[in-house]
Image 1 (cartoon, rainbow, N blue to C red):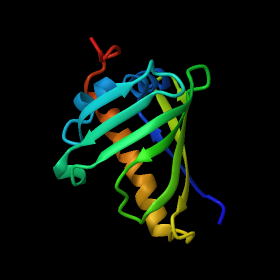
Image 2 (image 1 turned 180 degrees about the vertical axis):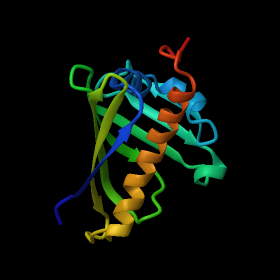
Image 3 (image 1 turned 45 degrees about the horizontal axis):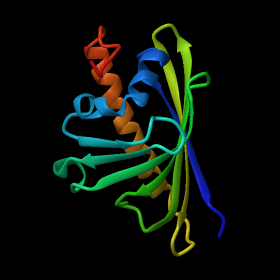
Image 4 (image 1 turned 120 degrees about the horizontal axis):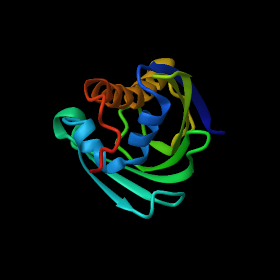
Length: 161
């Protein structure tokens, strides 16, 4: 069976530049997403081929590991595409799984995050709309944590310092 796609978008009350900066600075995620991401390891220079290993907090997600490989990282168009190499999924056994996030400015201090998830289940079945929503909501919950942090800390532009 061919891979399936699910897409959604959500508005954010921060500028596209600030949100993009956090997306690129994965070492800031344990601070920005405290209680959800405990640690991040990076293998590579941040561009295509870079591996990100996020250790999720046991209270947030059964202590699993979320491992991705960057496929596209385009700062001009604010597009980040990653192949998911390892994750415990609540919706089934995934044969393949990738994400593409595109950030678009909607104002000086607002933007929209457009997410597309491509997946294929090991058994070739399709996810129900409720299961697809769980996947999308999981990604957007992290976006909401980043947004909340940036709104609460308006001076934070360089989170790595």
